[in-house]
Image (cartoon, rainbow, N blue to C red; front, side, top):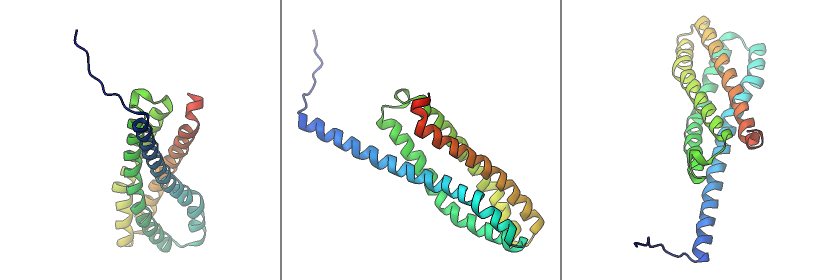
Length: 175
């Protein structure tokens, strides 16, 4: 009968492998959380804090120019955050044994995250590009329409982001 050879590992080797795994998981989780805070927190600030004040205090040309510049700066942080979220999220899933080894809350978080990414892609490549163009040619009526469509998409994405945070943090106890 053929026996499958195996190598015995000392306790020290297993201990260091476990410590390395813990370090990789803590780095991936930290990057994941920081990226989520940047993206969802930025949407919260823009939607809940800046938008009402800008609408109340600024005339349309100044307000639309402000939003165009604010989004330009914010989106420079959102793209790396999204990439880090996807890479670190899939890395964490792999380190935990793959999709079959994680709970339903991780599956829900992943689905909501990809939905948010798709909405953000539409927001960036369609609405935001048109807002920048409208501001550049001083078409304030079109800028108002573009900003309004962005407001709706950001509201949806913010809601999805907050739901995702609840599912991610408490999901293992709910599902």
